[in-house]
Each structure stands twice: as structure tokens, then as C-alpha cells.
Image 1 (cartoon, helix red, strand yellow):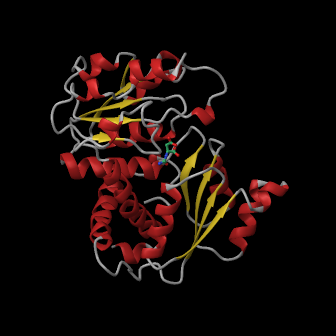
Image 2 (cartoon, protein in one colour):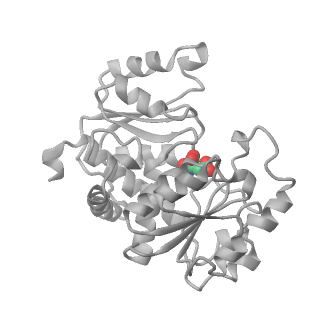
Length: 315
Ligand code: NCD
């Protein structure tokens, strides 16, 4: 594994397999009554979050704690960032205290890459703007592999606000590395500009027609991944009304019936229930949304372990 996890580009298919193997062991730990492993005893990890988060931050915190690391959470609100301190000064200040790893989320695409150049400890990108969210993509893939077995040749439909989604940008890379075929679906206004040459190079298909994709126009769909409409990143009107979005691109009860029985439904959360996903779909027997959350802890334990425990420990 490389020193940092900034992008899915930093991991090979072999790295992913090794991470999943460790994650499966961590998953077993998660079911124990006593959930502590000594692997990162004496190491300190800072979670530096400049953007809101529920599951990513708490799952990194739990992951670090279950590996016996000392974990410190710092958010921009309430830190000296709100007094005007620069990103460079903030990260140099916290690392000067002697920490061993930095997990960070920032609204600027590329922020984690920039910070990794300033520090000589591992940096894990927990989401940078609309760029990447590698641990989310790894936990999504891990959840799918546990459910479907090998992803080789499997067809995954990723549906929703692609323009603003770092989850989609990491997922197309990880799913490709695992041999899956991906079709992404969005209204024209939420399809990233320049997607034509990009999709040709990265090997994914695009569509504006959700019903067609679910009906199998592009081959039977083995899994659907819904993405949140990210209103906080929208500066203008991307669709006329919420109702119209749902009619065109929501996983409604009607569309749920179009899926083959047993087709897993994923969503990275947080969900806009009733907008991109109906309660029927979110709570369906085939919904893996809470499995994703629980896999998130195991996968982040694996990532922290591989990056911080040292080569000897991992062999
Ligand atoms: C995602 C994120 O923050 O990029 N959520 C997450 O990490 N679970 C997706 C989103 O906010 O919609």
C-alpha cells in the first residue's frame, strides 16, 4: 500500500483484496462483546473535519478506538480555522503535537493531496469537495462483494446527483478495479460536464433514462447505488421541483418493482427520503444501507491498520 489514501488511484486491485481480507477479520471483532484490538496502541489519530459528517467521522473514530489508537476529533467550527488560521498552519499545528495519522474532510477538491505534501505522516482523505471519498467507495465495494461474491462482470447502476458526488468519482474507479461494469444515471443538469471523453476513458456508461437502465437496456442490473441530491453544493436550480426529480430519478416504489428480486440497494447516506429514495426502497429487504454503515467501521479499521500499524504488523 502507498503511504496515504487520498484517492482510489492509491490502491491496486491487490491492495483492495488485502484490505478486504483484513476488513473481514475486523468485521468479526465488531460482533464481539469486547471490541478492542491492541494493534494501534500508543498511536494517535486526528480526525480533522472541515465539513459536516455523521457516519464517516464517527466510523473513523470507532475504528481507531477499537484498534486502541487515541483518537481526537477536531472540526472547523470551534477550531482556530474560524479565527482565520490557514489550512497549512492548522495541519502543521496539530501534527506538531506528535500525531501518527490524519483523517481529513474538506470542502475543497484536492485539499487532502495538498496536505499530504506538507506532512510526513499518513493522510487519509475522508472526502475532498466533489473530488474523491476513497473509504466510502471501499466500504461500498466491500458490502457488494459480501453480498454478491466477486464483482467481475457485475453491472452496477449509480444514480443521482453525479455532478456533486465524490462518492461516484471514487466508486467508478474501485468498481472498475474489481471488474464490475458501471452505468451512471442522472438528469442532464446533474451529469458532470465532459463526461463523454471521461466515461470513454474510464470505461463506464452514461444514461439520462433511469427506467430504461432498470429495465435492462444496458444489460441486467445487479446492484443499484442511489446518491443524495446535494443541495448544499448547488448554487442554482438543477431541476424544477423536488417532485419532478423524484418522478424522473427517484427510486420510487414503482421502480423498486422493476428490479430483479434480491437486487441490492445502496446509498452512502445521508438520505433524502422521499426525494432520491422512497421509504419503501430505503427500508426494503434488499436494502444494504445499514450494512454499508457497519462495513464502514470494518473497512476503516483495515485502512488504519494497513497505513499505521507498520509493514511488519500487516505481513
Ligand atoms: C457522502 C459524502 O459526504 O460525500 N456521505 C458519506 O460520506 N456517507 C455523500 C453525501 O454527502 O451525500
